[in-house]
Image (cartoon, rainbow, N blue to C red; front, side):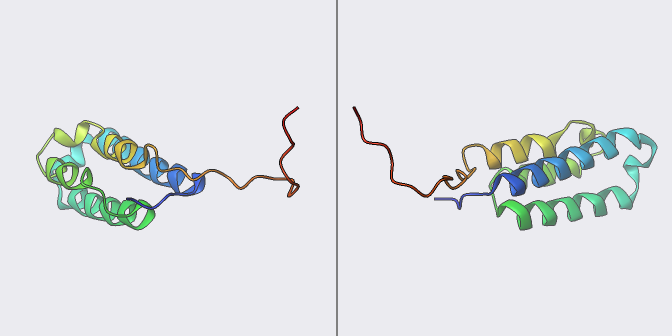
Amino acid sequence: MARLLTPRQVWMARGLALAVDLAQWAFLPAALTPLNNAVDVGAGLGLVALVGWHWAFLPTFLAELVPFVELVPTWTLAVMIATRGRIASPPARGGGAPAAPP
């Protein structure tokens, strides 16, 4: 079973993926440069560091190497798949015993 993630980790991973996808879409003329591939490698390493390895990252990374496929928000989709259902519940506040049923 995959480890549970804090809400902060999930939001950081989703923000990183969205930022990378938006940057690749905004800088379309630079899509064919090696810099784009370096951004994908950095995004992949950052996402694995944040959420751990997930199978959705491999096809995403391979798809990002194909010219003009990077215009599809594949990193965002992969992170949504990798983080769904993995958010840990915040600890309960109060510290008291639960109320007894009536």
